[in-house]
Amino acid sequence: SAVISQKPSRDICQRGTSLTIQCQVDSQVTMMFWYRQQPGQSLTLIATANQGSEATYESGFVIDKFPISRPNLTFSTLTVSNMSPEDSSIYLCSVGVANDNQPQHFGDGTRLSIL
Amino acid sequence: GQQLNQSPQSMFIQEGEDVSMNCTSSSIFNTWLWYKQDPGEGPVLLIALYKAGELTSNGRLTAQFGITRKDSFLNISASIPSDVGIYFCAGLTPSGYALNFGKGTSLLVTP
Image (cartoon, rainbow over all chains, first blue to last red; front, side, top):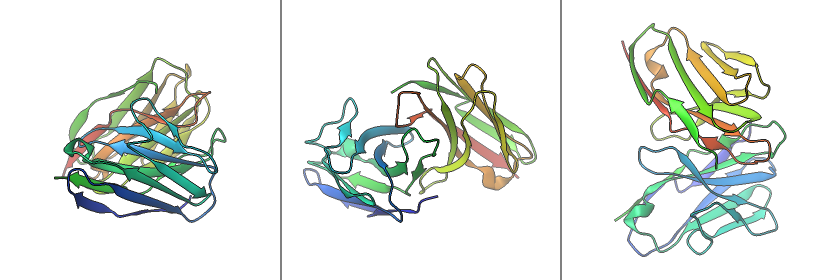
């Protein structure tokens, strides 16, 4: 399975600031996804990072708040913009091949706390 | 996304006991996955199921893809303390490309 590295692993940020999270994969992958896991909760899909085109956002998530880049098949970034305490969560990158019976694997996540 | 109902929400058992948890959906899935998440880490894939009726084992873990394609269960036999963690089911609909997750089952094992 692919090895997924996320940076930073954790951060504490001030209200109103923005943070960019990086996701690096050790092999080329078609699909990259960004999830949010709020404290004590399950995983919720934020968006699908598409290489060469705009990300596809799920209901409740918008590009202005969570801009995503996908410059190539091994790398993506998620920015959490204008942060508030409600954005305190674990943000997880995952990779998988769409509809090809390939299970998704996850990075260890970025633990974000906003003061 | 589709709603997955995962139960039980939590389990507190003694070492050596067997464990069973399940997920149901109102929609048909063509893939069921089971993950375990330890504190401070991302979910780790335990078992992947791709065919209705499929029964797959991974050591002491056994999972089945329900024949109706709307449910799946995970069994852990002879539990040990390192089985402690949160177990998530996840499913992929035929038309989907991203996973829908259950709310998780928190497992505690006492020696």
